[in-house]
Image 1 (cartoon, rainbow, N blue to C red):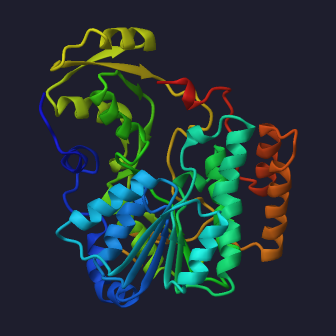
Image 2: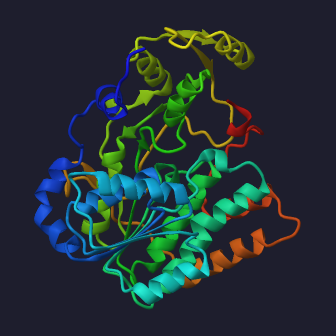
Length: 404
């Protein structure tokens, strides 16, 4: 079995780029990026995840004076620190701290109060998976994390705003069909309502190849554990590399005007199917796919595999789970886009802003609903549909936790 570095595989088979898609824009604006980041204090929330880590590595190239990182994943923070301090291309700020806690905790606000002000704050803490919507409990947790905690943070920061605030969104917020996407659309409206008080931007972007918890990341674990791959045959997606995801967020955070939404200017030729990626992943290691249309048969085959097998079971299926969108889009027809400002990024710059009072009413309704003792998923979907008229929930009665 051949070995192939994941970064090399992404460059050769997924993005098909050896240089970041956003490098030209970074170079063109390097002087401005340096002036906005150098010697500045930075707070990153959710920094141990794939995108948060990439963002941190991007801004460290511009020498901030302080870097504080919040994440509930204690092990992730440990590895992040080891990675940063072991990287010969990174110069660490002398004032560097990590805190394993939830950004909704009271102690989180104590940290900001006692160690602020921070010039740059970026929030990557979010429920990001479509699989997060299973029942009333998982949906309530998703709304609380993506919307309610974000609102509490914005209200807190409105009293002493940073110079730059960034909160990550998703392409799934454009004409959402799943609750995760709808929650991020509400978060976007929340951002817009606060954009006159806090300098704030966001970004919708493509799938991040081999990000933590993604299907592609799962391929690595399936190989380590001698387990079959499980691959949809009818899903095509846009991808960026982990490094590119950090570049998008840094450019949006530092260069955007308050209230703007950034997205990558990818075209349809850059869509790729999970089936193609899976077959290239195995093929790059000299392994031939053994196709299955039955999960049990694929698992039974895996029991017979030799240590250095040249054949791998792959279960192929058509998407049939709640919330899966058959196509990707970064903006809607109602939004006015600036395609000319950057080479690699488009900017949504006419987002309609609801009054802050209306947003607070929405927040109260969401909070009251998830506090109900007889909470139901259908009630939450109904309320989100009222808040986001473009939300067209696709309920199929089956979620991704029911698949391999």
